[in-house]
Amino acid sequence: MRAVNIKRAILLGFFATIVLASPIMCICGTVTTAPRPEITKGEFPFRIEYEINGETVVIDDTVICEFAGYSSPSCDDYNRYRKWKTSLVSGRKTSENIAIVIVENQQIYFYLGGPEYYMEARGNLNFHAFKLIKHSFWSYSTQWIYSEELLNMYKIKVISYEFSPPIENTFK
Image (cartoon, rainbow, N blue to C red; front, side):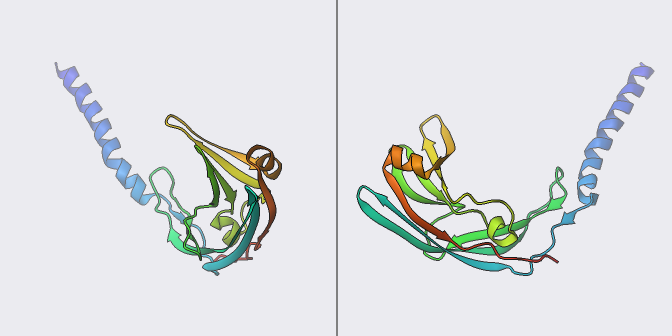
């Protein structure tokens, strides 16, 4: 009987140590924060011109990127990353894509690039690519589609596109 109680006490002690030590390890872990950007806001004009159903459409707008602080560290990842807020001068909704057309259950977006590209010169933009997003009741898929396929499959002709390059930012 005594041996069972000792085993229980050891097991209880082991679990209590894990439960009590986990929050302390999260709090006391080494948190690293990415350096603050010297330039915290940037505006990047762009222009896309395309033809659909015989009609020429021009999107002339500006991407605004603003530093939005840092992410919160978690127990899994002690790092704090830079966060950016992105918007368009026109007020049109965006993330890194701008919708150009919706066909049945498919949306076609022009890829604008993320704020990391514009403000940190990180990543690579492929301005020849569009994103095709297909929705159905049971599935969701994303794939890249290029100008030639866009013309052949959806009769959308890309006439021109002009984008601002990223800034040269420094971090302290």
